[in-house]
Length: 114
Length: 113
Image (cartoon, rainbow over all chains, first blue to last red; front, side, top):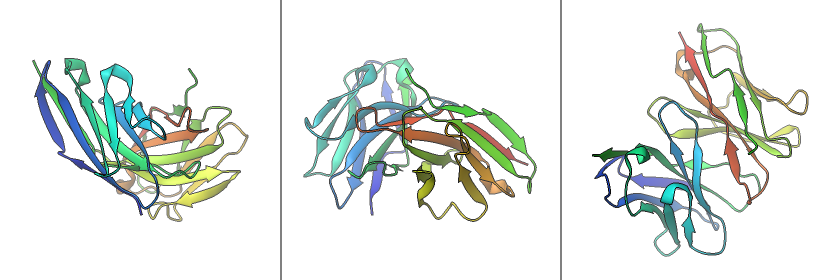
């Protein structure tokens, strides 16, 4: 069975500081990995995804993530936080099977201090 | 950009009542899903639907829940007799392939009173 663990339910950074949100996964087959962002009272917006190919994936809003198979990790980073980055971030995994369900982590709430 | 549309955005219902949540997936997508998110918790898979039938369902998706794609465009989630614990945000999603991946709607907030 697949699972996702997000370390830290709440992360607080200063504006301009590095953002690092941690995600570890468990999967018996090659995973497809996703990061979604959810702003208050809104839906889920895809930030980036890893399916195959390059392990460093760039997404929207300056975010990127690196798939590290040896560490079973897919941490999300952004060099310089903006106030507008404050939101809930979810890591998710699925298998190579077409149309497979997404399994989500518990989420990490990112706060950005001025 | 194609969107997944969900209606209504917010529904309040009395315990024991039936509710139908509606979704219009992206037209050329073949896989459809419902997820729910209880306030402050993670997003949980409910059910997936492909080729006009359920392809997978979670333990949450019991006999009180059903899904339909009645007319080739709408995709509905029905809860027959709502309970207080059904209060949550319900998200519809569709999937076409790994180029676009999964597209989520903006959700329906269901409040059972």
